[in-house]
Image (cartoon, rainbow, N blue to C red; front, side, top):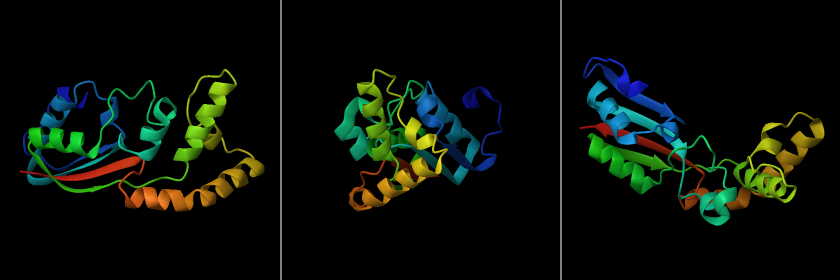
Length: 166
């Protein structure tokens, strides 16, 4: 794992974590290692599912955030606290909303009603026919007003954080 590897202290300008941190067993140790490796004034860029997303809060266990491989889920406040403890100062947080998130909730609901595992996103991820691709595109357009408001209110399903090493 990252935290078990030998890196020279202050040897990097940036730490990048794109949909990795939610799979890490000991997030505090992981971020402490990142702080050790990143020089003062360097940056951390983290992308992870947003625990404060509307899909997560409204749909509960149907949320695409719930996955057996996600060991942790983070909100803006929890990620800010963890980064602060590790020696980073949060510079910017955005919570974009991807249009397939609500479709993934619906897919999970339908799969559950059919007695299938509620693995979210199968319909969206397996858009292998023109009809299915067109349906998904149309649904994405229909939910655009909701996702636009959702993103503006910081309820998007992604959490992107930029933090600066003190």
